[in-house]
Image (cartoon, rainbow, N blue to C red; front, side, top):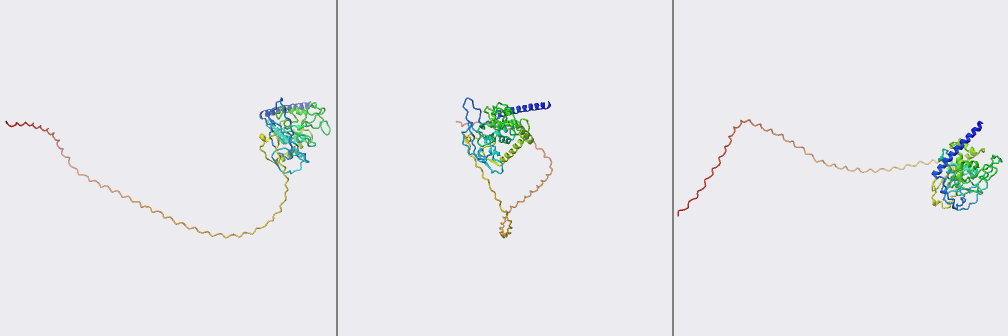
Length: 407
């Protein structure tokens, strides 16, 4: 009873964590719009534009590019003939790839992933790492997509499946049914064949290989088309990210990642296979120079997405290196020192005569003041009488008129 109760508690805890993660993812999608491939959802009344197969030129391109496709799917382009090394599934724009230097199969290189798949892996990791502290590397999702479905292109004969420009797998991809044969587990049908087209046994669904019961728990609409579709790389990659991060552990730690991968697929050796692919993808990224108009999640200008995919840069031919011969040490003869020229003495400049300063006149000494003689003392003078007032002059008598002569 104790074991059963522990299993019940563990299942309830995991279901609660899944609900929390899904709620956080929904908030991120609603507030950021990181995964909007084709703009807002189209109204149901109008005719829907048909999906077209994404072009697949034959040039490897492992760069993590994230363009923003136009709202209308580009017309179908003829796919080139499949080559023997299965490198005809690469699509990208403006990449310069260094020569291959290891012996991995072409299908195990990041260059084998279609551009819509790389876009879906990167964006799913961005959303889940924004919503949680999971620290999920997008290369882990790429490795899962490679193991489960060959990035949606199938694991069998090339050309059986294609990935559209919107990231949908056509025709729908299903894994082998889990009927207990060939070392596979036996899982009875849980969806009535609605998702996996298998009425008796469950089978992995879509490019990320999610079982119907798992998809019913982690289903998300990651590209805003109002449909939760396990055959859509955007939806499937984000659902896989939710499943990996459901326990709330830091997947940057190897032990936590190994346990999360074991819950994703209990097949023995599955975590080691994923980590081996991730190591190879890291090598691909380190050996690639990206020449793009933008990087990260920045959208590509509309005039660069006019319904066609730019031509690919041809693969750089492998370089042949020839070992140079060992250099012979030759002692160079000592150079004869050249006679040093006798320096010509420069004439000394004649000294400029200094002007004779004018003599400063000596100041004439001021004459000493002659002392004034001391006057002899004199007797006080006798006071002079005050002058008397002079009498006023008497008026002269008026003259008497003279008497005239007697007549």
